[in-house]
Amino acid sequence: MSREIYGLLIGVFTLLTVSLPTQIFLLAVAFLSFLMARELERTLRVEGVSVASFFLLISYFYNPALGGILNAVFALIYGYKSWSLDVFFRTMFILFYTAFFPSYLVHLREEGILVLLTLILAIWTNDVLAYYVGKNFGRTPLFPQLSPKKTLEGFTAGLIGGTLVVLLLLKAPLLDKVLIGVITLCAGVAGDYFKSFIKRQVGIKDFSNVLGGHGGFVDRFDALVFSAPVFYLLLRG
Image 1: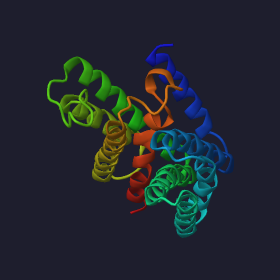
Image 2: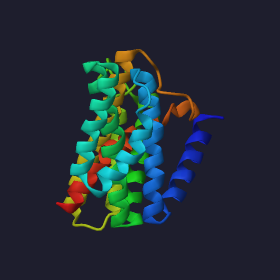
Image 3: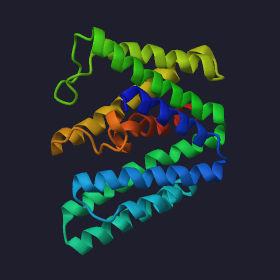
């Protein structure tokens, strides 16, 4: 299937999942955490941590302090079993990245379906416009070592488009909406580069090919999970 068809299917499934009751949505996001952790543990060569990510996401959601403590304990267990400081820190990172960040998608769902949809649609609009504008009109690379195909033109188009989505859907004063949109979308772009840095360091194109041209779950949801805490904190602030 083409990238566009995969993208449409991912979008439909995501929107259906968002409409689920909050507690069921929590389990769905915990399963996403598990899938992301599986990809990262294969990439970073740390075995068996993905199951812990499922339960850790739930812990982070209900009590971030407890989640942080359990994250450290799991890292200690896996580091001790392998007697490797490298494994300890890799486990710490995998579990934090795949559990803490996505847990804020559930917090946003508690704020209302429209709030979470605003973030999702803004991030998707940013991704689509950045991809197609950068592909067809991009001339100025941003960070070529991290992602040689991403351009300033694509970034600008994505930022404008995503912010317009926030302006249309979010209920807040105009200036607040502009600031929330710009800062959140910049966080999403940072999340994309964050993932790209890991891929460049280990020498892979995608974390998996389970989603066709979109790569794996980490590739597809990187910007969304990275921006979720930022969006939530800005709304509450």
